[in-house]
Amino acid sequence: MILIAPVNQEDIAAICEMERRFFSPPYSQSALEHEKTHPDAVFLAAREEERLVGYVLLRCLGDEGELHRIAVLPEWRGRGIALGLLANGIDLCARRGAGTIWLEVREGNAPARALYSRFGFTQEGLRKRYYEDPQEDAVIMAYRAPRGKEETPC
Ligand SMILES: CC(C)(COP(=O)(O)OP(=O)(O)OC[C@H]1O[C@@H](n2cnc3c(N)ncnc32)[C@H](O)[C@@H]1OP(=O)(O)O)[C@@H](O)C(=O)NCCC(=O)NCCS
Image: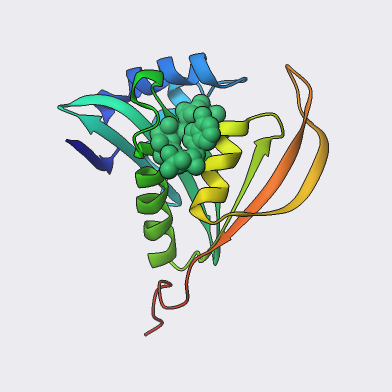
C-alpha cells in the first residue's frame, strides 16, 4: 500500500538520486534539505513499505502556490501515485490559503502534461526557450482549487 507523508531525512538520498535521473539541472542535496524545513514548502513522499517511490514539492506564496517538482520511479508509474501526490500537496496548499497553483512544464513532456490536465490544470501561456539543456519552451499551467478549500479567515 502506498502511503503519502512529509519527506523526512531518510528520503533525501533517494530523492537526490531521482533528481539526477529525471531533472536537468537537479536539486542538490543541500537544496532538498532546505526545502524539507522551509515553512513555505509542501514536500511529500510516496512510500511503499518504507521505500520511497515518488515525491512532490510545492511552495505556497500567499494565496498562490507553485509546483516545483513531481516524480515517480519508472517501475511505479501508471498506478495513480502522481495523482495522489498532487491531490495531497495541493490540498495542503489550499488549506494554507493558496487556492491557485501554477507550474511550468517542458512542452515535450507529454506524460506530465497529461497528468496535469487530468488533474484539472489548464494551459495559461507559453514561455519561449525557457528551459536549457536541452533548450525547450515552457507551457504555463494553473489549477484553481474549488471554493471552500481555502483557509477560513478568523
Ligand atoms: C509525470 C509522472 C510524475 C507521472 O507519474 P505517474 O505516477 O505515472 O502518474 P499517474 O499514474 O498518477 O497518472 C495520472 C494520469 O496522468 C496521465 N499520464 C501519466 N503518465 C502518462 C503517460 N506516460 N502517457 C499519457 N498519459 C499519462 C494519465 O492521464 C493518467 O491517468 P490515467 O492512467 O487514468 O489515464 C512520471 O511520469 C514521472 O515521474 N516523470 C518524470 C519526472 C517528470 O517529468 N516530472 C514532471 C515535471 S516537474
